Amino acid sequence: MVDVGASGVVILKDGKVVLVQENKDYNRGLWNLPCGKLEPNENIFKAAVREAKEETNLDVELDGLVGVYQSINQKGVDAIRFIFKAKVLGGVFRKQEDELLDARWFDLEEVKRMRIEEFSWPGVRDAVMDCIHRGTIDSKYLTSYIK
Image (cartoon, rainbow, N blue to C red):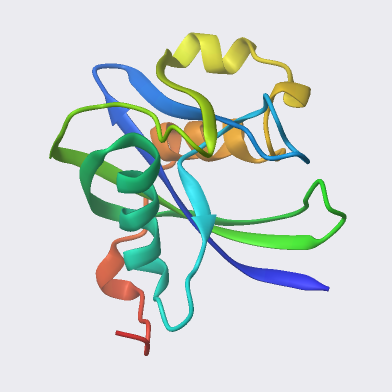
């Protein structure tokens, strides 16, 4: 089974990145980017913005695609994630109470030192570092036929 339906964001500000600590049975306590499944008839861009708002209460604007990442998730499902860079437009930073244990700004050096077992999926740290070192693909080159 392939789960082609997760969209998330790398939110960077002042040398720090937002990570959220999961509270689901299968990944409780693990750190992730603000990320989640697409809703029916939702495009990957709107899903990424919605997930950022739901999980961090931040209003964001997408600033390009960081990458597409594939891994086997904790449920044994082949998961494909679309990760975007996002810039903060507003909102008051706080975690989503029912789905998350914690949400906070991490220093980039701290993220580099974290063990792979501390992340919800193996590509979390890679996505952050890819965003910083490689940059993004301009969203104007991406198309969704779902509005």
